[in-house]
Amino acid sequence: METYDYVIVGAGSAGCVLASRLSAHSAVRVLLLEAGGSDRSPLISLPKGIAKLMTHPRYTWSFPVHQPREPGKPSREVWRRGKLVGGSSSVNGMIYSRGHHLDYEDWAVAAGPDWGWDAMRAVYRKIEDHQLGATDYRGEGGPLHISAGTFRYPLTEPMIAAGEELGLPRREDLNHPDLDGVGFYSHTIKNGVRQSAAKAFLRPVRHRANLTVRTGVLVTRVEFDNGRVTGVVGRAGREVLRFPAREVILSAGAILSPKLLQLSGVGPAALLRSLGVDVVADSPAVGENLREHL
Image (cartoon, rainbow, N blue to C red; front, side):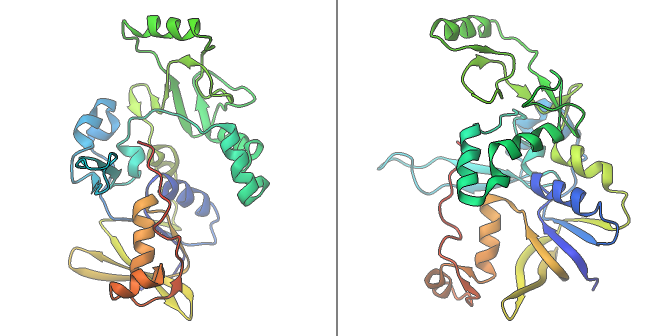
């Protein structure tokens, strides 16, 4: 067993960025683990491939929703998440839509000024390579290419005109800080090719000697010693694998990260005990308060 400085669980949008940033320090050893496979399929690069990807069990996790949106009616909802390098950024609709600046101000109240709009705007400008060029809120020259929408359905211009008649300003870029307006979406597409987090952040650095990327490894447990994380345990086929680490970062998404914590004994103590899981930390919020963007 090799010991790593950082083990990152999940090679989705966050995991790809973390692997890139952490492995930039040549003195540290970084391991990125992904339960799914590679992102080499032509369906991933081809934007229209989303029609095949979203329901393909090789590329997506499928989570049926048991709670109906309307009381008394059956729930037919299924939430899907990427199960491959790049995570959901390799299978999503490629619409580039940022949060409202007031949302980030709420973050600043909860977590400090590093999460406020001024700080986040600087981060966006650093990572973006926007086709429309740089402004005080939009970036150019970064690793993530963003294209302005160019395809026009016959009805779109009349719809935008109707919005203008209602008083909505027409926006060249819908990610204007006010987020009030009408116009065409921007996309994470460049020259007809999907720009996933893997393509933008991970692929350019995979040659680094201190970065290891392993696919097909499903992490099943975070290991603890006297309350401190010491590594993770995973499964590749029938083989059980252990990865000791100085630090473990869970970036398996809003559904699988809390699930992994609960399986490891971190979560609501009464629930874990009822399922036969030894409690490491009673953390009632783990697994709660999820809001799905649908």
